[in-house]
Image (cartoon, rainbow, N blue to C red):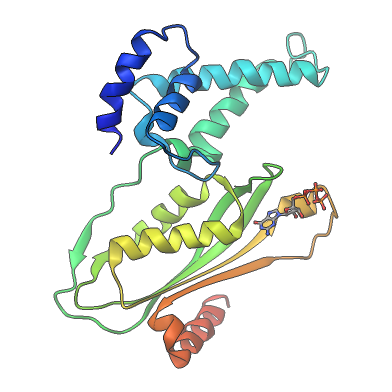
Length: 243
Ligand SMILES: Nc1nc2c(ncn2[C@@H]2O[C@H](COP(=O)(O)OP(=O)(O)OP(=O)(O)O)[C@@H](O)[C@H]2O)c(=O)[nH]1
């Protein structure tokens, strides 16, 4: 999608040699009129080799953060490589869903015309809140009511898509909607249900420091929204899966 913009942006880059790689990527996104919020995927705006440069840039800036925190990262053996470790953790792991393209998802036509609900879960998910960048650790359940047009996807792909969507800084309410949109687009079911239950470490580790609260969010689409009995069956089975 960004290809058309990319060649245009390459010309721009000719006169902006010396720009930081984050500025180059940001410029491409801005020129294409694209958002680059914390939970947006920007993989198609990053060219070959730029992820290595971005990791190095984030590492250098993280070193400045440690410096501003008055930590002697140059001489302290424990924080010597911390800045680069953190950059690697952000870009490749905990926020990797921003920088990586979607995982390949093989789909199969619904030849047998299956029309009964199926549930996958609990799928363990890890995310981060966009306010304090603290971990969010949770579980997701997905319910699908297939239609004749449905593309069936392999079981493991639900977990892979969850991981891709969740490993970005965000709020839970938006994360479940984004996950539901992605699944609906790929599966085209008659009904889709997503439940997410998660611990927010911005409430446990800091802030109110309350260990108890868990946030539960649901998204009900199509038949799950219209048919109360189906919705109840899904929510009941989810509890059973929970043990
Ligand atoms: N709605 C929602 N809120 C979240 C989520 N993750 C974290 N939060 C909350 O977002 C708020 C962050 O904004 P502020 O209230 O301005 O932050 P703060 O003053 O540091 O708040 P405290 O956490 O109360 O110290 C906190 O109340 C968090 O608990 C989420 O996924 N959804």
